[in-house]
Amino acid sequence: MTPSSPSAPTPAAAPNAGARIDLVGLSREALGAELAALDEPRFRANQLWHWIYHRGATDFERMTTLAKSLRAKLAERYVVGRPAIRQDLKSVDATRKWLLRLADGHEIESVHIPEDDRGTLCVSSQVGCTLTCRFCHTGTQTLVRNLTAGEIVGQVMLARDVLGEWPSPQDERLLSNVVLMGMGEPLYNFDAVAQAMKIVMDHAGISISRRRITLSTAGVVPMIERCGAEIGVNLAISLHAVRDALRDVLVPLNKKYPLAELLAACRAYPGLNNARRITFEYVMLKDINDSPADARELVRLLQGIPAKVNLIPFNAWPGAPYECSTDAAIQRFGDIVNAAGYASPVRTPRGRDILAACGQLKSASQRARRSAVVAAPALTE
Ligand code: SAH
Image 1: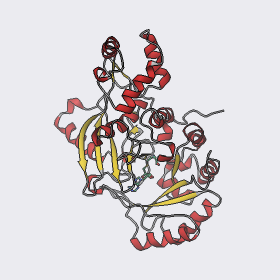
Image 2: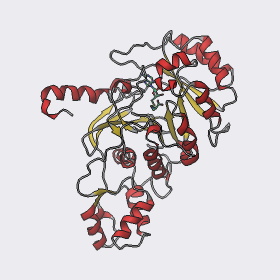
Image 3: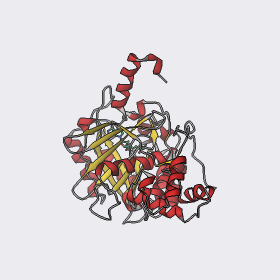
Image 4: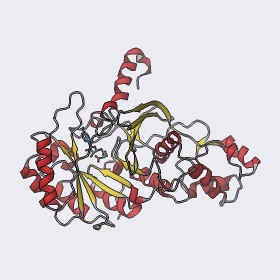
């Protein structure tokens, strides 16, 4: 039996897209059904798909392979939407963060991280998060709702708009990789995430391969198998501790799905081999999880799993209960893991100056909202 989302948070409220339906996020089949309802042949869905996801068109008038009468019919009933940019911040290191407003007024963030050989978009899967990881700023906020598939794909499309990457280029892309490492727990919103990733991977459109997509989870064990089987993207696990007693504190989800179960699910991840390893993320917290004994225990836990380890220097935020490990401690930890045969790069923090680094997302918009609350109490949720 395939499990449905366990302990799924508040059901997704349908965002108010106005009277017209937003086509972004519909599967090919659903797009075909919309066209069939207009008495159009279903194959027109392929033409529409090309305009929306390959060319990036948002205006039906520009879809010149469709008859003028059909363009008019479509414009009456549908839109090809985008989230609105509330803020566009650029870091000194060229990382870029967009604060986006959704159709119903909620806000999310996406981060673009340019590197020499790639450009990665860090995408959010929920507004806020329910997980309350002790070291994560997003975890201090309450979940408002799940994102829809359209809102997840919309982040990629918006980034493409801003980066000027339409029609979808084949190579040398500024947006070549996607990581589901923004706000939220993607495996608590699996159906929308899966539908969105299928659209992102589709060869006739955005066409980002599954090898260039990584889903990061805090460890929603019953959904890990489906993630591999249904979308086959790279898996990253936010491990952060090697003993249940500590992981229960840092990642409270561990109380539900302890380390032994989590690692068993990793061992069974479909498609896993030496060329497709699981990434284990490990945030370096001073005197908490950064001892040589911890590193040795990590090596023991990973035994038999094709794995690499990403060491993430802790990114502080106001009121955070932890400090970042010293460089020497990170080095020592990495050396032990590396000597055991696991790549263990230290992830360079990107975009810290614009609060775009791991675990810092949404904080700015929350502060802004708090001051807005003071200014206009009648508008609070
Ligand atoms: N909920 C998913 C997706 C979030 S990914 C998950 O937990 O994997 C964001 C990554 O940044 C996670 O590995 C998270 O544990 C890490 N992170 C959170 N807060 C951080 C911080 N303050 N410093 C460094 N990494 C952090």
